Image (tube, rainbow, N blue to C red):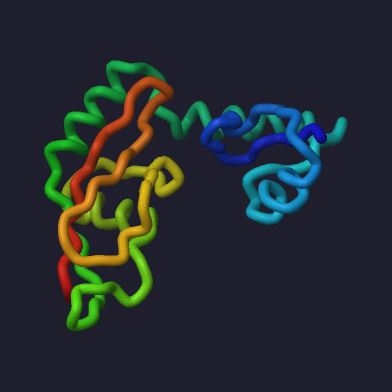
Length: 148
């Protein structure tokens, strides 16, 4: 099935790309989550709009990405959240929480979709997350989760 990606999907493509995927993957995962729309002849017009928006938001060069990486890795991110007595959180820390904590700490504005959390953060303490800034540049950010 041909689809048009509306957001970046790891391992598949960036926003505005027309890709061919299995029917079930598109129907059950990508389209319901708003990550893609079905390809139609009329939808081809939307591709240019999506690509134009992507060009505005994305970091264009590796040099810019390295500058943002240096700023990100220099920021100490502390995230206050509710936790129980044993240090377990009520819920987990989401990429949106991390993005807002980075901005609050004086770091650059980061899109939550670019933050990759390998394991769900459900405990207090120090954790590492990765931020994909460019196809070839990723920054490692330390996040300190403390009880509120």
